[in-house]
Image (cartoon, rainbow, N blue to C red):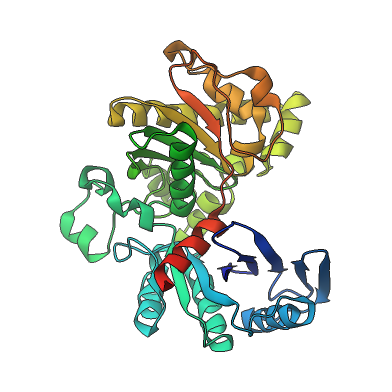
Length: 392
């Protein structure tokens, strides 16, 4: 009773075969550098595995190779043991508030939404079409990053621009990382034994976002029309005065594509330090690099700014949870952020914070006014469970 979860990117395919009931990861793999001179494919099944280096000209070849590896290394995908294939899709627009069974009309809607997710949706669509062709007898389900944030109240989702233009071009706050925020906030409720929580979830990876969740429903999130808005990220600006676009167009002669590249790929930590990986930035800071030291302060400041705003919006705060790459692994970041909240009585145990663990855990002290946790995200498991629930 397994579900194959596929995340098809612009130049990669990540996949995991998961038992949604137990959470067991049965097999996993990665196809990367699709379209480059030399690609790389890795497939793992228990103690068995195989790696292949060579050209992977397109996603079709990549998926065909993955299926052949399942048959060669195991487990078979054609013996009826997989009950669904779950596809991650970033942008579902205003049309999807939950998982959807893929048919031609759903495919067409995902394609229609490509302008709202130009870096993600086209690649997801290729993966869906290839997988449907190669595995036509298994239900295919799409799970959208934006679905969890369909519950945002209008006052949070609405941008203050001309209504007719906004409606015509479907401009509103959609958010992203919703599958992670939904999974993590649900785990926090289980850990704390409460459903009536006012939570802030900090998904801090190369892409970073924050959400406010009340009683299990999202009421605010930092990413907006696209994943560019909000926190400082690895290569993205996060919040910035939109007039910077006009200024650079007029004074630097930059066109739309150049500005898009600057804001999405050449900003954030990379723009401030030359490095987009938080670990590399910390190394520079430890060596006394002033740009890196300042970048880390800017990074933490933005997070704390959102925590304060979201606590006010929710009328209080019960839990702050760190998740994703840096959120789960960077103890210094957690200490910096929570240290800036000391005036509000938020406290963590330094030893618990410093300890390395892959398990969900509470870091806050007994007298802290807010529970502080680390909960590893598991978007693949969340996708598998949503896909299985739909096909059942």
